[in-house]
Amino acid sequence: MGLFSSPADKYSAHEQYLSEHDLKRVVNHERIHILEQDKVERIREAILKRRMGDGKISLRHIYKLLQTMVPDEINKFERDAVMEAVADLFDKKL
Image (cartoon, rainbow, N blue to C red; front, side, top):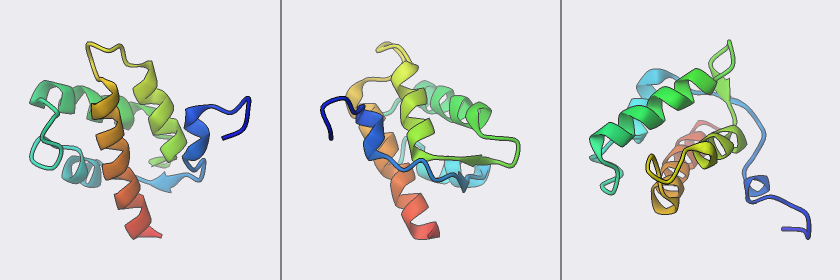
């Protein structure tokens, strides 16, 4: 990262299609044990709302969205776990 870069800059701005089914498959309590079910629902809902009209979203958009959630909603470890799960999904789609 450069002197004036953001932590979000390490994530790709390339948008990929993210279906609700795929999001439920990778962001859930069974896969990310540190997430409580109510947090899972809030995170999924926020990501689904943030997708573009064509259902696409980038990892950078997801990271920035998760950063805006207050610590009561999601902490750094939970955010990192969600980012890892979605990044793995996007990597497999490429």
